Image (cartoon, rainbow, N blue to C red; front, top):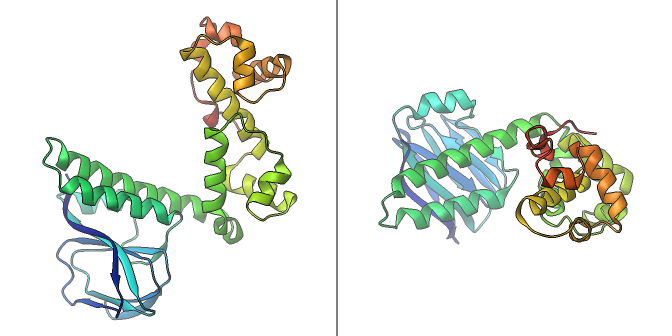
Length: 275
């Protein structure tokens, strides 16, 4: 189990700060730099730009300080038997500044760690262990995903991921591709190119999948008619809805509601072959 030792979020040092650990921290120290900073690892200096994180090995000599004031960071210290081997299995880079694909994720998780650590609950330690593991795995996963795309696509990773999440959470919303592109200040063609490079599918595919995922949920959990479900999922007419449902899911909405082919269509459309 990974044990949280201490943590803090949005610490602001208006006059700057110098953290110097010539023998290492003695535990894993995770630092999220929210302002431009200098990091020196085993005598080698580097600049950690704003929204960069680093996980220091317990025995690695290091120091960090501000390049610009105020110095702002989130951080936590942790330890656990088997943690080193687990990080090796993840191929998680230690002692290396890494740009954060989603800065809000890190702050949100550390805020949760801070609150959970102060609770006197039965499952507190288990929750902290899972939250730390989840954060590190997500950061590792995001890093691998970004490495697979071009630098220009990675630049828009956060914005386009947020847009994609909104498509799935608001399937009834009517927006043309031109409007989606404009919402992230891109041309239609460039937006479509970056979107497919990042996610392996077209934005139209995701719009359809978001609608049909919601349709499946309503067919499973409501008494709405097929017509009402079509309207709830953003379709202007029943025929178009039923055709797309049959094409992507493999059965008609009525067949799906009555369990026909349910085993074959139970997997989320998000994970089917992309267009």
